[in-house]
Structures are given as structure tokens and as C-alpha cells.
Length: 389
Image 1 (cartoon, rainbow, N blue to C red):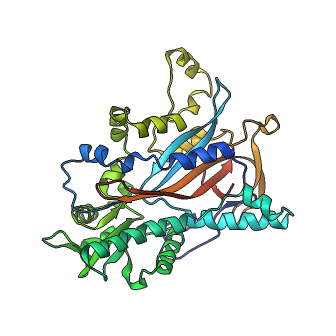
Image 2 (image 1 turned 180 degrees about the vertical axis):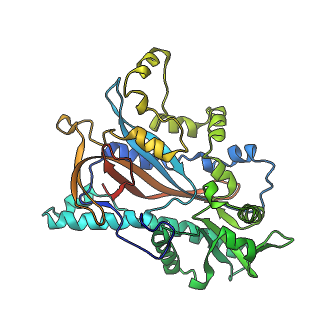
Image 3 (image 1 turned 45 degrees about the horizontal axis):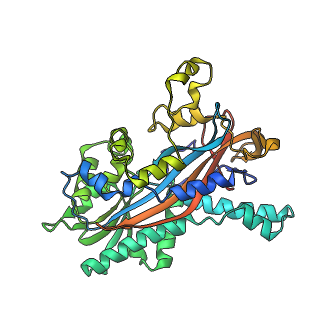
């Protein structure tokens, strides 16, 4: 909780939107479509820029959530998707997304909407099922490849874990798929320094047990590496043949340096498709003067790794149906937060779409499933409320 950030044993209801917030269907479908076009799954691209790593793992697993906002272009007045970021490490909040969707379906039923209308308006949403499926397939393929039925799934977590409930639902889904409960192990990077070893064959061993999959739910900020112990743990993991989600190359794919070299591959069909569906921000010479006007520069993403700055930048964008002139205004919704009065506010939403890719040197298996809608007050720079559409 906000009052107990240093504790993992205190819980409260997550903030949420009382009703499902509208989001343009066309843009939602575009976000789902583009999820399957992922640079982090490009074997040639990543291997070219990480060729000195010496990968030991035989397969690669990427579990991602791509985040977008609905943007009204100030020149064309058209509504388009703008990508905020791609999360390929600790792509979280799938459990919250699933449960808020179920809550909203029930709420709409109580308000008198028929089942057909609700099914059409609120899409099926099962990101936990997708994430668990990805981890299970990676674990099962490792078992088959190395004939090691006792191999474990290692979940890397934070010392003070505020997202443990979300993580536990992934574990419960893995158990439902057939992973024995004692073969799902949670450890911090600090603990890994004591309990992990690397065999001469580059097998990763956890207290003597072979590790099949390492699922990172921590390790994405410098704060997760306070000493050399944590860095040593990460290096040991990366040198092993365990399937990492993500391996360090996928994590580096989100960095600014990778984005700088990405245009060198712009002649590929996938990149052209990505630009067609979700073009990045660009500024022509004719528009440079306009940036000096008050409020205009706030429309552009300045630094993709600074989530807080991005959300401040995009506060006030319109998540509405651009084809309907009646709705060309900010959406209103009731925002619910523990220990605070319910408030009716102008809101703006951010859409996240989940997907995974699992494969080796050939064509990876790519799947999309589930989404997350985060909604907050128009001018509020704080944690969003969980929502659905």
C-alpha cells in the first residue's frame, strides 16, 4: 500500500473505474493486430547487435505488453494509436485486468444490459491464461528437450513485493496446467546469489534442481541491483541454458540505443507494417514553429523510459470515438480508490495488449490474448485505475 511500501504483507483493494470506459473499436483491433509484429522476436536483429553474448539457451520466450493511447492529431483531427512503451519484462497486472473485466460485465448486467450487448462491448479478456500458457510451453519444451521432468520454474521477485497477488494468479494458472506446486519457486536476485550455481555444461541449478525457465518479475530497474550480488546473479542466469523471460537481449530491445539502430532494418515487411498501423511521432520542418506554442510540445513523447513523464505528457488526450461528433469530449467515469470518496471525473485511458512469442532459430510461435485498460483523471499524475472496455 501507499502507506506501507516497505512491506509485502499489507493489502488493499486496487483502484478501479466503476464502469467500462469507451475506447474506439477500430484502434483496439489495430493494437491487437500489431501485437504480433514484434522487434524483440526478430532473431536476426537481436543476434546481430548481441552477437558477443554467446547464448546457451536453445529457445527464446518473450512475454510482452504493448501500451498505447488514443491520440487526436492537431493537424488532421484524426484519431490514431500512439505507442507509449513495450514492456517485455514483468508485463504485469493481467490478474487485475481479468477481474475488472468480470466485474464490469456483472455491473452492466445489473444496469439492465442484455448478454449479447455486453459480449459485443466488453471483449473476452484472459491475459493470465496467456502468460501461464507461455511459461508452461517453455517449461514443457525444456523438459522434453533435456529429459528433465523435475526441472523448476524460477520466478524472480522483489524484496518488497507490491504485485505479489498479480504474480500468484500466474502461479495458480500454471498449477492448473499441470506444473507441480513444488516446481514453481520464488526467489529474489539477492537470494539467488546464495542458492544458484552454474554447472560446467551451463545448466542452471537451484539448490541442486535444474532450472528450466526463469520468469523475471523484478530486475528491470537499477534499484533491483543494490549490490554486486544481484548483478552476479543476473550474469549467472544469463550464462545458463535456462529459458529466460526475458533474456537480456530482449530487455535491451527496449533501450534507446536499440531504437536508434532499428531504422537500419526498415526495409523489412514487418517494420513497414508496424509503421503503417502505429506510426511513431515525427516533426516536419513546417511544424517546428508550432512546437513553441503553449501545450503543443506536451503532445510529444520525450523519453520513452520515463513512464511518469510519458503519462504527464499524455494527460488530457481523448480516448473517444472520433467518428461520433456527439462524443468528441472527454469521457466521464466514476473512479474508486480505497479510503477515498468515489468521484465522477473526466478521464483518459491507456490500452495495453498482451502477447507472447516462443521459438528457436526458426519461426516463433506468436500469440496474442488479453488486454489492460488503465484509466485516470484528466489532469491527475498518479496511479491509474484498472478498467475494461
